[in-house]
Image (cartoon, rainbow, N blue to C red; front, side, top):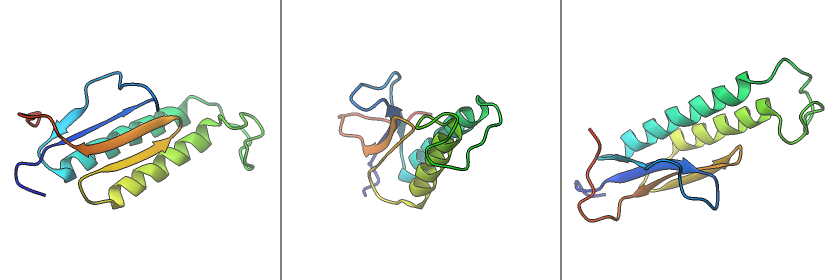
Length: 113
């Protein structure tokens, strides 16, 4: 990595462009921590919308493959994977969403304040 490296981080539905502009960071740890926080918010949102239910089996007897608790657990596992990662790029898919960090390749790319 060089001191001039910039990183984009964001998420999208696989096969589609992101709904929002990716966030831009001056350093890998900043991008990693921001994306980890975003994944945590998504995991909390997945888990909290469902009422208590029997979820001891896979697939879930109540929600099958779309169990929000199991989707939340998958998101949290991807978050843990991200927090253990280092380097210039990272990708992970959980709960039907692709999360990513990549080195900015746009001339004049600057980090957000």
